[in-house]
Amino acid sequence: MKKELVRRGIVDAVLMVLLAVIFAFNYMLFVVKNGFAPAGFNGIATMIEYKTGFSVGYFSLIINVPLCLFAFFTIDKGFAIKTFIFSVVYSVCLLILQTESVLSVISRFQYDAQGVDTIFPALIAGAVGGYVYGVSFRRNASTGGADVVAKFVSKKKPMLNFFWINFAINAVIALVSYFVYAEPDGSGGLLYDYKPVCLCMLYCFLSSMVGNSIIKGSKSAYKFLIITTHAEEIEREIFVKLKHSATKIQAEGAYSHSRLDVLLCVVNKRQLIEFRDILARYDRTFSFVETVNEIYGNFVNVKNEDNWVKKTLEKAEKVILPQKGEEKAQEVPSAEKKGE
Image 1 (spheres, helix red, strand yellow):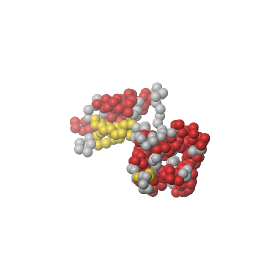
Image 2 (tube, helix red, strand yellow):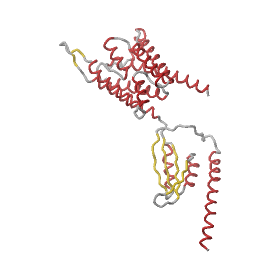
Image 3 (cartoon, helix red, strand yellow):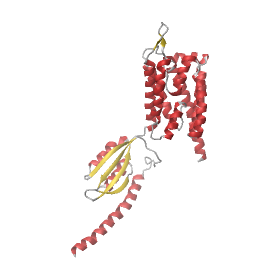
C-alpha cells in the first residue's frame, strides 16, 4: 500500500510539472501577442504585465505561494502540495520563456493575430487551458489562483459546481479588462473596446466547458433497468452474448401485486443494439435506459478467460434450479388441498 501511494505521488508530481510547462507555453504562444486577459488570477497578472511590464511569472509566485499555504491548512494537504508544484514550475517556466535568448526562438511559433481574427488564438488557448484545468483537478490539484478560491468555496458549499464558480470569478476579470485594454484615441482620451472582454469571456467559457467534460470523464456507458417475468432467460443471454452480469432485485407490481424481477445492468455503447435485441424477444418485459457518465470500480476482465461464461452459468443454475424446485413443492400441497 505504501509503495502504491509513493508511486501515485511521483506520477502526480511529474504530471503537474508537464501540465505547468504546457500552460506556460499556452500563455506565451497564444495569449501574449493578442491583447486579452486569459482567466483567473493569471488574467489579473496578464493585465498588470500589459500595463506595467511586471512579469506574470513573478506575480504567479507572489500570489500562489500564500494561497497554497492557505490551501494546505484549510482545504487539503495533497491538493496544496500538487498546486504548489504546478505554480512554481509554471512561474519558473514563464520566466525562462521570457528571457531574450529563448524568446527569440519561440517568437516564430507565436500566434500574432495583429488584431484580426483574434478569436482563433482565444479558442486554442481556452481549449488547452480547459484541458490543463480538467486533468489537474482530476488529480486533486489545480492551476492556482482563482482555482484555489473556487475549490475552497465549493468545499464549503458542495452543491456549487467548481468550474461555474471559477467562471463567475472570471466574468469579473473580463469586465475589468474593458478598462485595462483601452487604447489612446489620439486626442488625449481613451478608446474603449469590448473585444478584449469578449475574448476573455470566450476563453473562460471554453476552458470551463472543456474542464467540466474532463472532470466527468469519457468512460460513458448505458444503464438498463429491466422489469420482467423472464429474468433467468435474459440473464443467460446477457452472460452468453455480452459477457456481462446483472444485478437482480425482486419486486412486486403495484397494480397486479404479481411477482416480478428487476434486472440492473450497465453495458458499453458498442453493446447497446445487441442488448436491445435481447430484450425485444421477451413479452411482459419493460425497460428504460440512462446514460452513465463514468464507471468506477475494479471489475474482472473476462475477455481472456474462456471458461467465464460456463462458470457463471453453472453458478446461476445452482441458484435458479433450487428456487424453481421450491416453487413446485409449494404448488403440490395447494393442488392437493383443492382436490380435497
